[in-house]
Amino acid sequence: MKKVWVLMIAGMLSISFVGCTDPCKENVLTQIGDAVATLGKKGLEKDQVLAGRKADRMAACAQKTGSDMKKSLGF
Image (cartoon, rainbow, N blue to C red; front, side, top):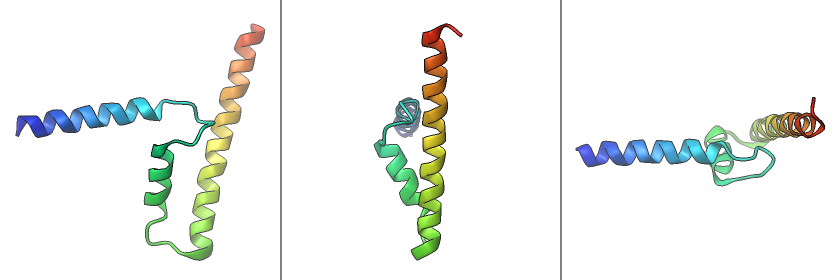
């Protein structure tokens, strides 16, 4: 039983570390998240969910890029 808990905690930690990567790049977790978010949805509803999630990722990327640019300029 203890081994199961250790494996679950290690898995959660590894997922959290992978999730802290660059938001500008597609990774396995974003693809899994998209798949889970669109379970049971079809057609236009599925496309709307995917477009919204992609827009959120692009906004996070733009914000990160802007903050990185400010840091490099010394602001």
